[in-house]
Image (tube, rainbow, N blue to C red; front, side, top):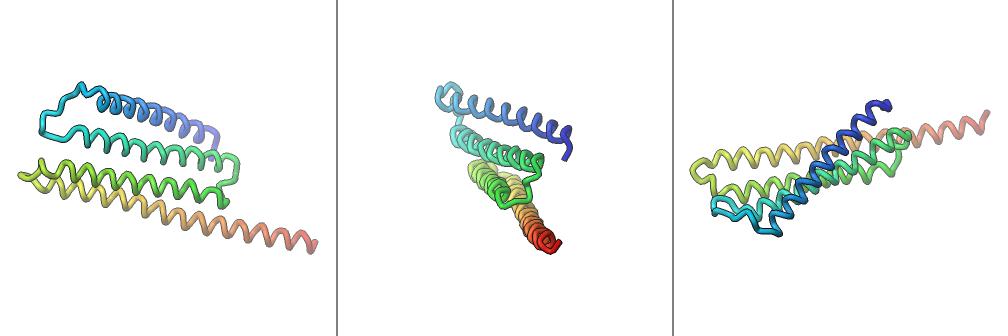
Length: 163
């Protein structure tokens, strides 16, 4: 991964992380101050709490991606240490899916006239879980690469002894 790519990705992560923290702070402020009264159509407090948690899942994933990019830059990504960050991303995606299912459940009573919206929202939650499965498959590929890297290092050490 080139320096330009790493810098561009880090710039995007900084901008998105900064924006997400700002949105979280504003959401917490709205919860604490109570200035935005609920009109009864949607339970805004529940949606705000779910949104704050959902943004937190994205922040965890961004932190893990940042660390993995650092490992790529240093050439240490093919090590056992990278698994915890990949696991963090998988966990964050699963948590995001669960928060989406919570949004779906909170929104469902208002969709009695059009239950298809709830079905579509549930389908989006399943798709989010599908992304977690894709990352899990990529984790398995990383595990294979780490195993091969360890085996190659062992074989190189044996060859060095012979020579």
